[in-house]
Amino acid sequence: MKRAAIERTMLIASAAFLLTVPWLVPAIADRFWVSVIAEILIWSLLAASVNLLFGYVGLLSFGQALFFGFGMYGVAIGVEKLALGFWPALGLGIAAPVAMAIVAGIFAVRLTWHYFAIITVVFSLIFYFLALTMKPLTGGDDGISFTLPAVFKFGGAEWGFASATFQYFFILATVALCLYALRRLLGSPLGKAFMAIRDNDVRASLIGLNVYWLRLTAFVIAGFLAGLSGALFAFFGRYASASYMFYHVSGEAVVWAIVGGAGTLFGPLVGTGLFILIREVVSTHWQHHALIVGAVAILIVIFAPRGMVGLWRDFMGRWSGGEK
Amino acid sequence: MTNTLIALAINGLVWGLIIALIALGLSVIFGLLDIINLAHGDFFMIGTVIAWTVLTSTGSFWPAFALAPLAGFVLGAIIQRIVLQPIRNAAALSIVATFGLSMILQEVVRMTFGPTPRRILPPIHGTIDLFGIQYQVYRLFAAGVSLLALAAFFLFLHRTKLGTWMRAVRHDREIATAMGIPAQRVYMLTFGLGFALAALGGVVASPITTVDFRAGVDVLPFCFMAVIIGGLGNLPGTAAAAVLLAFLEGILSSFASPTEARIASLVLMSAVLLLRPQGLFKGLAK
Image (cartoon, rainbow over all chains, first blue to last red; front, side):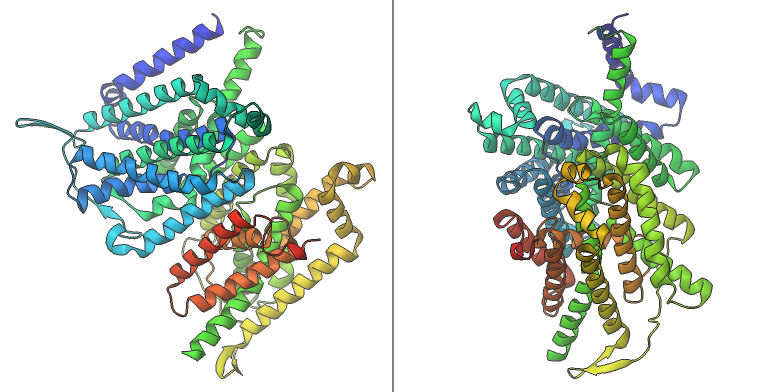
């Protein structure tokens, strides 16, 4: 079998699995795993936002939790304080992080490499501490809990996140749509321009690319992905909390993206899946799962510096004898 | 009001000197190895835990001053060799590796030391009269020790062969290697020293703060602020910035909450990054 054929088969098999999760998983294991898979899908968007910036534009952001937090708070404040319905709250949960990304990006993308990594942490820390002080609005560390609004209403019938199956498919559809859009984006001239900047920003500017605008565009798209991830997570957990804006959340997303494979479309999903599964499987037996998470991160970085997807490609390359 | 202001200002100075010690370790590691060390706060935390362990097992606090830096140095050298050497030329990977390291260190301490924060009583009791306020003697002692350690480190860097090697490798790795300097051993030495400085900071700070497996999480951003405002890799600048920042936060917290003081210094730091990315103390760089 050719490599492309193997990969296509795997893709179809994973798609088939993801589409049947709500029925398949309860049949073979606990229902609980359906929500674990939904959680993996949500967090993979945050990892994808790190990956877009680092893997394709060459900017390592350590502050994506800022936009994740804005997404969460957009939804929670929209539902709880402004009494919005599902769609307007989701809209607010997307608009708030995108607006924040525009403002933060205007400053942040003037810097590169270490300086960029550090200023993104600094911005996220500023708003983390602000969220802690603005207790009446944000609830501080305790956060805000809210009751779910319905997603669709037709007469007396309602569909909403209260139904686990509906929730799962809503999340799956959103994530699939985002990955598809990312794929289209990366194949487009804009995506090629991003990669040109990643490979050599001086040459990119010499051939007439506006490096500043392109970096800002990527930053805002990444802010959108992280914000959407946060908005979905708010609906999923029915609450928002400042603790999700701390730099540890950003750090985990960086680890997921790089361990999965930076600069690949599915790398972030693979990395997120690996770490959340480790956490869920191990933490039921042993409370010190962080030990294993840390060790896996270090081992993969040392032995598979291009991540799990890179490892897979090397393996396939050797196995099929360099056949493309 | 003036009394609280004086107390907070002196507290800021004392704390700033301790932070300077820790941030110096971070800055050395960054300048020479090009590693953004996310585990550095946990190196500090290890120092506080060693202090607590020494105190409870021997009944005396003082051996910790020798033991913690020593243990830190050995651990740091081993970590550099095993974890960081294989990924030497990939700075992004080293961020992931040190993040993993941070998780491991915190979890190991949580397993062995336990999740509950503990307090250490200052080994020097009593207060003295300082500008009209009663001030803990131990805090002055802590400031003195930090100052001494800072001076010793700069002497080491400028007056010994190893220190010269470190500066040479930082300046130009290829030429240093060509001149016969064992760069690999200098890397191990540097990372070990960075860890030792943070661990010493932990011992000095342990009777002032709490001993907790998460103590590093709060210290790390503050150390990074000092490193940035001082100028990346600028060692005297780092020390100066740490003292300045802690002093400013101390004064600010007399009329604002500590969180608001922290926000103010973060905003200052963004301004420095954007307007003077070489740091505020360019003149101090050597």
